[in-house]
Image (cartoon, rainbow, N blue to C red):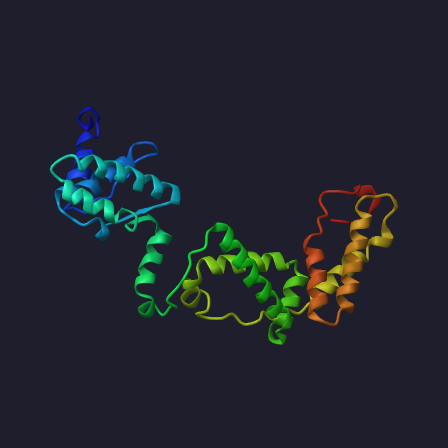
Length: 272
């Protein structure tokens, strides 16, 4: 059948050229699982490689189960031919063979060598639901630690003053959890120092200058007027703020202030 396809030669090579490492790229539904079944059965039935020494890694548990079922069918069929002894041995090894997801394969290695890996003898691989539950438990504990740690209280309050919320820290914790092995070499290499608050004298003066033209408006209904009043009030609040947390909160408000092209020129003596 493969000889009738344009890529028949490639399919035949996947099945028969077991001495070569091959990288196969193919689209969905093109027969990748079928080709993998053919290659494994060739390794077992032609080359005499025990199934227990072969690893077939899949993306999902469903794909792993499908691969295992297809191999069972092929080995059952082979029992009726000359390779009965090899097929029987493969069927005996099939249930415990390394056929499944990368997580399952890694778990199998760790269970076989826990001491070398520095792990307890029994470990479990959590499914998606179990992993989410475990993360929420870790996050609840980490959140309490963050709120109780005096050394991080100030930067945490400053971060919240500029709009950072606990949900943002939660997302960051999840990302760090997904790539925990990269944190030491990429995140903690040069821990950043706290950013010093700049001198706000010039900003306060600019807000006062802008607010100084409020009284010269000829029309109290002019749409530019409330914007300038808001800038003046924010400048006064910034000048009166005595701690960085309050200053950052006011700066965050200024950052979100949009004036636009509003107001009528004839209502103002001199407004650029």
